[in-house]
Image (cartoon, rainbow, N blue to C red; front, top):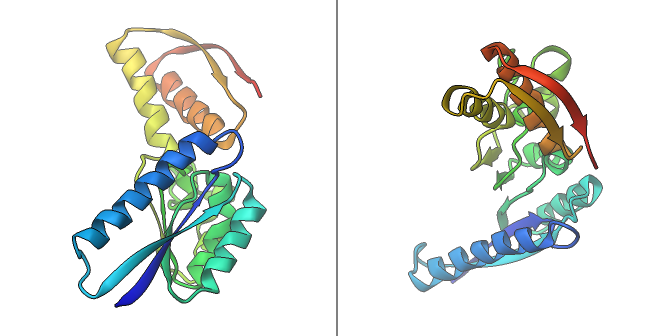
Length: 197
């Protein structure tokens, strides 16, 4: 049989380790089930786990190592947008597929004014030097999540004033940014906004 490897690149160590280990376990389960069911005839899938420790440089090194193994077809990960930013151009140049469970920065895949990813924020050509899509995700982007949260609180819960606190990380600040934009466009008042690490 032919062996095809699927890699994971998740922060399985550090403060996000327990959540990332669940995602890695899910990937292993999918591989095990596909092999047991002979989903791809004549092929045995093998999971190869990498730990990016939610560090951009480590993630970039991991992708480079994956590309050195011709049996690795693609990867699940990264979970953080900051790591994806470092990995995307490397993977894109090699037409290497990345599927993220949680990297939600809209600028990883968009360059529209509506997403906030145009002009100085347009990084798409940097992330896609080969001019083809190789990065995919299974989560809504920050702009969609933040806008939906603001709309729910304003229209369904009928709140009119908020105090916005984020964790200072890329995901939290992104959500806060798009939440505040939508909140203000609905007529809501932001009493104060703070990043707390």
